[in-house]
Structures are given as structure tokens and as C-alpha cells.
Length: 198
Image (cartoon, rainbow, N blue to C red; front, top):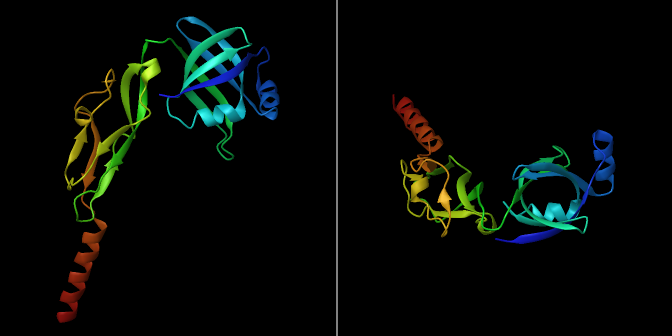
């Protein structure tokens, strides 16, 4: 689990105009909340934050106004729908040793059984509970040799030590579907031959 250090400043200006000014300075407005404390409105360095957010559930060590250090994880990120730049970020305050519930990406490895089968990601992310400083970046599932009709349930996924499921054990994460387009083309060709013979 990577920990990224960012320098943040508290902000006292709010509203769209203030947010636009912050973004013009290549910074991002954000809010830090959690543990029953009052939400803290921050200004964060845009480029550094963008790099940090490339890692899912990144642990961010915030140096706020050079006075306090806090640990946080991203909870909600708003991006410009066209240009993709960061518009706002919500950060959840965490403490070392504290358990948090997060969603980690599901990655797959291996080849499906031959036959043009399709792999469907029913869940792209897996809800898990982990210590704030030991959140896995992703979970990897082997789909080697799985045939049509096979499913991978949450309970089938090997989790790192100290990480537990935060979803029903029987929840389907991946399933293998039979490719239908090829069958349809094959049937159409067979029907065409029958028509030609008649």
C-alpha cells in the first residue's frame, strides 16, 4: 500500500467563483471529514493529487498548513466530464490501525477454456474491510480454463492477510458466458445451405 504525501492549505472561500480561482492556480478544492470532526475545507495541489489518485484507495498523508498531519483516503472524486481534470475531492480521515470499508479493483489473469467464451465482470470492484494503512491496490483472480457457465464468487477470491469481505460470500464477481454471435452466424450459414439445396 503506497502512501503519498501532499501539502494542503485550509480554505475560507467557498462557492463556484472561489472553486474556479483555485482550479486556475492548478489546485483542487477538497473536503476532509470523518471521526465526528467538523469537515475541513482544503486546497490541494492539482498535479500531485492527480498522480496520487492513479492508485485506487491511495493513502494520503496530508500536511495541513504546516501545522497538522492527517491520514486520508479518497472517498469521492469529481472530474470534468469532457476534459477529465479534477474538480473536487472528498477525503475520509483515517487513523493507523483503523479498519475501513473500501472497494478494490478486480483484475483477472489466465485464459478461458477454448470456444470463444466471454468473461463478464459482474462486479468490477470488490467491497472489502481492511486496515487503513494496508488496503490492497487490487485483487487478482485466475480465470484459467473456466468454461461457459462457470462463476467466481466473492468467497472464491484469495484476500491478503487482515482483509475480509464486505459483501455476501455468494455474490457473483465474474461469470463465463457462451459466445452467442458465433452460434447465430453458424446457424444462419446452415440455414442458407439448406435453402440452397432445396
